[in-house]
Image 1 (cartoon, rainbow, N blue to C red):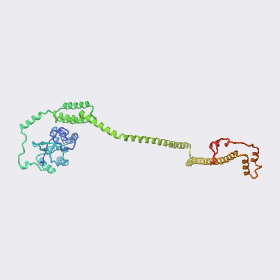
Image 2 (image 1 turned 60 degrees about the vertical axis):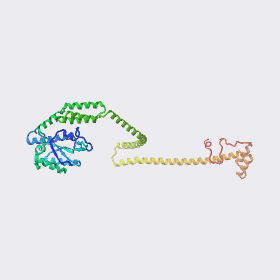
Image 3 (image 1 turned 180 degrees about the horizontal axis):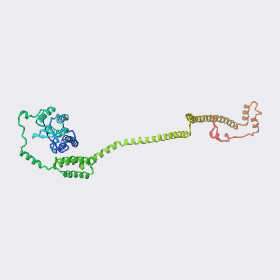
Image 4 (image 1 turned 180 degrees about the vertical axis):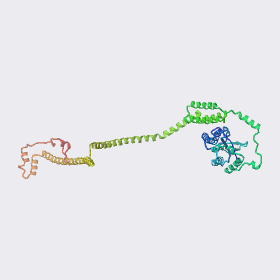
Length: 454
């Protein structure tokens, strides 16, 4: 278990990108646990500038002069924690700093990816948090001046209690010497080694990002989002270069990382396209039948809508006719409501009377037609009966005819048939057909339709 510790130093603009891991970090060697950061570098820088402007203005209003250029306005704290600690625990430390020193926390982060591996292969992780906060209080006073020896001792104790960790050694209470800092010559040697790293300039930044932009254009595959990311990253690095916190090597390393992110290999792009095309083909094959069924449904629906439209058009035309009649009526002067109601009554009741009259006439015509049909049936039966008699007598000899007449009359003589038969000479043979050449159906009382038409 780690021992509690909090260390505060002057902050730099590059710390925001380091904390959020938006800048390349050589110390990041583990990836089995996730880091945490409260906000991105761009948002943190924006918030820092806004808060700094407010507190600088408060200082000017109170003192009557601008803030000194060498005043430390950005402080950064490094806090140890154990594996089980959460962002909520570190947030409690942030709240403590804000309340204790009247400051404003801009960003905090928890890093679980730094440490080292022993010769035996053991992973030793350096669990630590970064807290970036304002170096001025709400009145523009320096927070650094509040961090005297007593305040720092109490700070170590309070943070250990907040995180429920073992406090580090209290050298003042133990009355022992603290570990020595670097000596003068050691410090000079360190500075010389640090000087070997040449700081990047705005010209270097422009050159690197312009080259990357041209590469994106050459690929002809960059999206609007890619160019937007490029612009945002350039603005972030401008701030770092301006504060002289970025070397040329670090700039190139970060730009190369960004290049790998934005420019994909040609093979990777082709594979992505092929996979996309294959997925689209499969999806198309699966949905072809669904599209056909949908198309048929749409066609049927279109036919139904057309028929419905025609019906509605007819109904609308009838309504327009009635409306036109109303309009013609209301064009004429009307003096009272009674006149209007009478007109409406006459208009609609007259139509009902016309319909009733027409219905009566149609009913009379139907009755007349039925009467004609009955008369025709009676006439047809009489004609049939006469033709039967004519056919029967035409095929009889004289004796048979006289016998037939005698049966129809008591004395036989003196009838019209008798007188006519006396005038007829004997006929050897008669055609058993009527002049109309239409055969009579002896078993059917109805005449042939062709014959009746003649």
